[in-house]
Amino acid sequence: MKKLTIAIVMLMFLISLASINVLAEDEITTDAVIEQETQDLLQDDIDDPTLEDVGTTPDQAGYGLKVAMEKVRLALTFNRAKKAELALQLSELRVREARLMMAEDKLESLEKSRSQYRKYIDLAEKNIDKIDDDNDLEEQAKLRVRLDEQSNQIDELESVILIKANGLSDAQKEKLLALIEEFKSQNQDVEVRFNDKNEAIKIKLKARGSSEEEIKNKFDDEVNKTKNLTREDILKRKAQHQVNQAQKMYDLSSKLIEKAKGIVPSNETNSTINQARKFEIREKTLELHKQALEKLNEAKSALDSNEFLKAIEKARESKKLSALTIASIHGKLNEAALEKRIDKIMLEKEKERLEVLRERQKNLLERERELKDKLREKTLDEKDERDDDKNDDDGENEDEGKCIEKEGLCCMGDNCVVTITDCLPDKVPAFKGCNDSCMPIIECN
Image 1 (cartoon, rainbow, N blue to C red):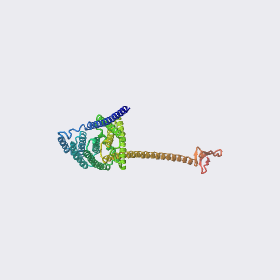
Image 2: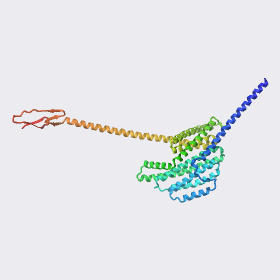
Image 3: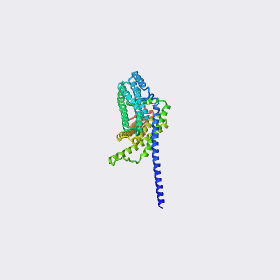
Image 4: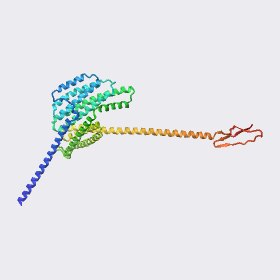
């Protein structure tokens, strides 16, 4: 009996040990899958069609020659608007180079792109400042598109950094996040200069007789023309890549959420403040994940409808949200860095919501004005009809009170007076009109 008991205990111990091993293997497999999917995402970023024309990168021989040739192009461009556009194009190229260097873990080479970016973005800002206020909207539209695309590329770079954050040292994370802040700050400085110049040009156009709405419509048309210069097959390929990448990033963030859901870090303090803060971040993370799915579905719908530019825009928004979701769970970033980015996303979401509400209110006000105008027109028409009817009635009433001659009769309204007058045999009665009492005047002639 004692031997049997020992055997049963040993068997239970072996079963429990096997279960622990299976769970450990599952955990390892899950981590391995997440790591593999992260690497696949980074390779996807390298394969992004927008990076195909980057050319020689900072880690390759000949990069110095490439930069020198760029400077020659700038020196030979004398028009301020065109020079600003070229400087923006080249500074955007530096951001795309940085994306490649970041994805390939070549952080030292990334510094070369950063240094050149500063020079080109400063040059763009100075030339935008000096653009003539008579510059046309077509040139301004090109600058607008360049600024937007550069901002998109900076967001893409930030997403790569957030995805890779788990494998970086604290010093590297801090340095790379500072790089992003620098890129964004300088891009926003140029944005301010551009908006100031745009306002000055609009003032000139208004002075020449153009309305605010006419200027806005023309500018938007020029922006759309510039965006649609890319061939449709290239746009479609870019849109498909962006949507596929957004899907992969969303799937990775979903797995991380499932893995982390309900787990409290072992080093969590008992402080009520810290507990509340962790819960708040967790809720915000789930909200980011939800928003990422909404944008992803919008991107898919746009792609199905062949709205490639919209699909690219929505897919990029989804990627940005998923990257932040991944970093907030897996990236081991400090809370301040996460909070800043999460709060910014939430603020953008709120601004978007308010913009929708403003647009809806604007449409309602326009509809209200239309209805009021229609009601006013209807009221005026009804008043005119009543006035016409009244005039007709007045005319009829006036005829009823007036004595009218009708074929030798004196009539007032429908009542006619007939007078029979006897004349001598040699005389004939003749009608001479009506007197004041509407009685016939008969003379014998």
